[in-house]
Amino acid sequence: MYEFVQAVDPQEWVKPRDNETKVGQAVPLLPKAESYSAALASAYSAGQRVAILGVPECIGPRANLGNGGAQDGWNAFLKSFLNLQSTHALPLQDLLLVGNVDTTDLMLEAEQLDVSKPHELLRLRELVALLDTRVQHVVAPLFNAGFEVVLVGGGHNNAYPLLTSLHQAVGVPVGAINLDPHSDFRPREGRHSGNGFSYAYTEGALGYYHVMSLHEGKNSATTLKNLADAGFRYHSIHHLYDMQFTDAMRDVTAKAIAWQAPLGVEVDVDAIQFAPASAYNTTGVSVAQAYSFVSDLASLPEAKYLHLAEAAPSCHPAGIDAGMQHAGQLLSELLIAWLRGRGRRASEPLR
Image (cartoon, rainbow, N blue to C red; front, side, top):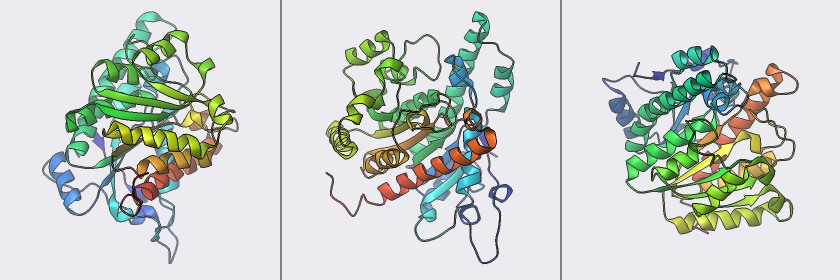
């Protein structure tokens, strides 16, 4: 295949049934060509516009002294999404199932490292930096070819290669709106899932940033100060408790429009109540609110990518089997939200 790209065989996931067509039997796949860029050009000329890519890793969350498990989010998504029915309600002709970033060697090394030992924690953070380069290698050509990107699975560390790749493609600082109890604006102490946005900001890739559902008790005073010093703001989860979510989304959408910058839409699954995530959360937003968050922002022509991070099926209280089902359904619904939202771009005026 292509360097650092592992193809997906949908037939390994699809449970066929007579007289039905599942998504996995109809979704366009990355074509064979002489190079990765040639394959993307071929897919784009065939009408595909939304590239779906997985990153099966938990190196970033562990390097942030958090839980593992995010490596399974991609497979949970495939198992659920590829078994949905193919109907007119899903514009499959717009999709390109690229596959996933090959993380096998990095994960094998990371599994041997003990975060309680400083030198091994340092190596884990070095592996995240190597992963950054690998994700950029796969994602940058997607943006350069004109695709929107939906990145599924792995830790929130992958926001950094998404933002830097988009920045390089468009040549201007980009914006991001992040549904997350954490700002992920921790100090630049070596790469991990908690500082993707601070690295991207310092390096000039991230020019505009807003966090939805931030919990002030889950962010250090230093992190909140650094966020404020950069000129970035947030809607706290407690603020959202006291207002209509639709009003908050109206505020955030207006802000994104005012930025006049390419936009990344970020979702940390642990923002959602009871979702199986690296950091389990009982007091976050609802699935319906997360769906609206994605759909409303996807309706903006500036929206260039959707990042679905930190789903960790093994962190489900009922075990990994329940977690795979829960995470798969949730990730599938959020992808559908993106597709439904982008479908409104031509039919509705900007708010």
